[in-house]
Amino acid sequence: MPSHPSSLPAAVLSGAGPGLHLRAEGLSFSFPDRRVLTDVSLVVPAGRPTGLLGENGSGKSTLLHLLAGDLSPDSGSLEVPGPVGLLRQELPGGPATAVRAVVEDALARSRRLEAELVAAGEALAVEGGEASARAARRYDALLAEATLADVWNAEVRAEAVLQGLQLGGVDLASRLDEISGGQRERLSLAHLLIARPTTWLLDEPTNHLDDDGAAFLATAIAEHPGPVLIASHDRAFLDDATGAQLDLDPAESPAATEPGGLTAYSGTFSDYLLARFEARDRWEHRFRSEQEELKELRRAVKDSASVGHEGAGLRSEARITKKFYADRNATVVSRRLREARARLARLEEEQVRKPPAELHLTHLPAAPGRSGGGVQLALSAVEVAGRLEPTSFSLSAGQHLLVTGANGTGKSTLLDVVSGELEPSAGTVDRPRRVRLGHLGQDDLAPPGRTVGQHLRAAAGLPEGEGRAVPELFGLVHPRDLERPLELLSRGQLRRVMLAAVLLDPPELLVLDEPTNHLALVTATRFEAALAQWEGTVLIASHDRWLRSRWQGEVLALG
Image (cartoon, rainbow, N blue to C red; front, side, top):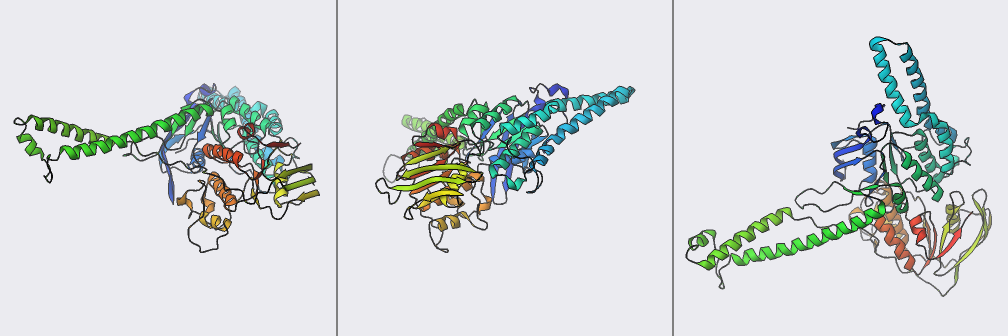
């Protein structure tokens, strides 16, 4: 079961001792409808930030919740130096809670530790004998915990964190329901960094960070003396912030054993990519070679065990033995038969399992109704009070435009105006009615009470009761998931479904808000490549440095 000690010995203050390592051994976990993790073992050393990778639905978030103590494993054990900070936990208080109260809550532990340390020091000064020894041990333990939490710099850290995560301009008196969703997510990250727990479990920490915010977070991670485990699809951030990777995707293993576990890689994310692709190639080559050898061995055993004329029965071992000294040819046949049978039995037991087909984007639909160069979208001095400064641009058929800018400059607001979900305070939006628009929001929610198949059939315009057939899945959705409720999907799986739903009614104008958020690395990379070749019109907002560094279209910088 999880171990979350409230205090640590002074010997671990250097951050290098085994007492600060996160460890898990043989973890398995199942939901009522499926097994998620099988026999997962890992070590995350203090001072070596580690990436947690895997396909959407591979169990990354589930593993983080197990390590945080939110879930109990079906089997296995784990040791996590506490206290533990899990980024995706809810902010303290409800919608009416003020931002200031969240910051105060994050500072509470540092203030408590400092007060307890002062009291322990005073007790140490007056105690004597055995009581003095107990007081000294308590003082040492509190000093170790306070040093690890950096309690003496807590107030300064709070101010630096708010500024570094672009929250310095937020009125501390504002209620949580009065700030944007992106600001709330950054405030959740700020709460963790200010509180400074010993172990950090970060699930997609950069989804609402611009370049400066991501750089600030990478620095904070590098300076943290405890274990840091990061589940992220931000390829550039993983390159900057991590020095090791843990991959939950299937790896080469014997077919006779139950699939599971994870694969550890040293180095940055780019190092991991090269090693992973090489490992996959070796696995596929070994599987093909073994299957070819198995086919040859089975044929050899069959041929060697047959008499050399038409219609004869099988040669038995007893008959071969009787002829051993009389027939040299029979001696050779018998030896070869034994060797082939032994090799066949050994290979059938040791052969690797078949590499599973990787789920990835196969293609984008053809853009319908493209007419030569006609304007499909025009904005003139469009403004949303307090959220978007006056903005003007136009898009012709087939043109691709990337919207960039720091947090708060109005990227999502602009896309909501274009899609018709938000009315501008001023200015005009001109989009011909004939132009079909497809909009992927930044954090689309799962419609309650609907399965994946029902949602996709509705997106394709199929009536209820049409059966299970969905016209196209684009390699984004596994057929086995069609009957699963949307509410049970991971954020990455839901993202895939929402993207597939947009593509099922092929748009002429594709409006995408942070499309690579939550997408697995292979899917995100293939999607970017397919988008670059798509003949339709694209308006996209993204903070993804990997995507932006490879963008070939036009760029609009807000702010």
